Length: 79
Image (cartoon, rainbow, N blue to C red; front, side):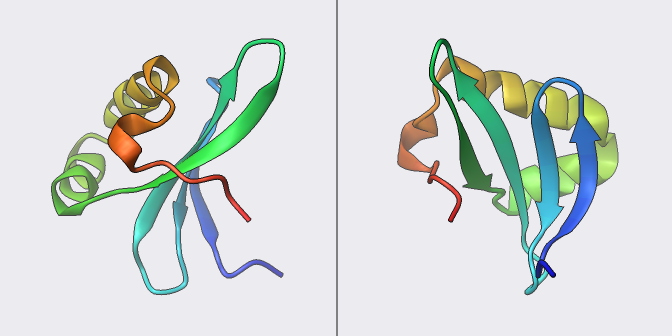
């Protein structure tokens, strides 16, 4: 059983998760021929935006991660 709760699962190949400690993260499938997942933990501002805007914010964030998978050095490969 996972210590994470899926808050949002999108057909755009991402999901928003609540970690055991309450922090939010987004996991996005990226790549072309070779696809893999990257995860970015949301900062306080992003968490607030997700709570206010929901799917619309998550869609924009996922698209930004797709355009730049390292996402400023914030993304990690999920374990």
